[in-house]
Length: 174
Image 1 (tube, rainbow, N blue to C red):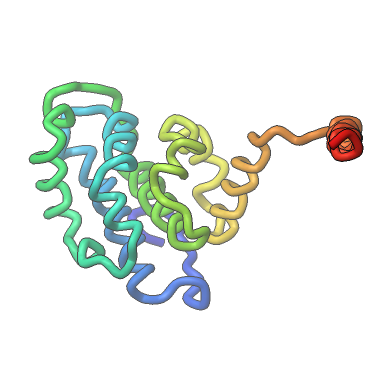
Image 2: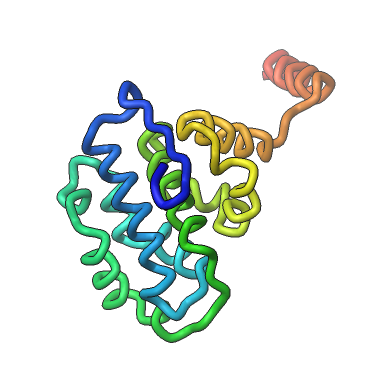
């Protein structure tokens, strides 16, 4: 239990560097609440599409060893809007959980931050917090992956059959 948040870690799923990366991003998200005027949704969106998130997605990169406080300063320098535009802030424990889960998702599913954010944005994570925050990290990420899969259109048997027939008929006429 850390800061009132249950985060179970399976060491067989993530190594020490990956666990530290998750923990650093969790702390970074938590610090954002008191470090920026911007609302949490704007902060998360800006960060998930940022050059810093892109660099952190590559675990071999030195950015993974940057402190959360240093990352706050880099974001302040690079994204002025975060210090000027006011907005609704999420509770620190929610921000900590969102930061941890987004980073774990990147690591466990080999996706990049911007892809994950496009599929599951800050508002959706806030909505899921009450139901998901006590889940094991791996289980939580798997459920989020299922949510993404559910968004993809599923073809009915009829549509599949129709496509096969069209493909076969076009081959016969070629």
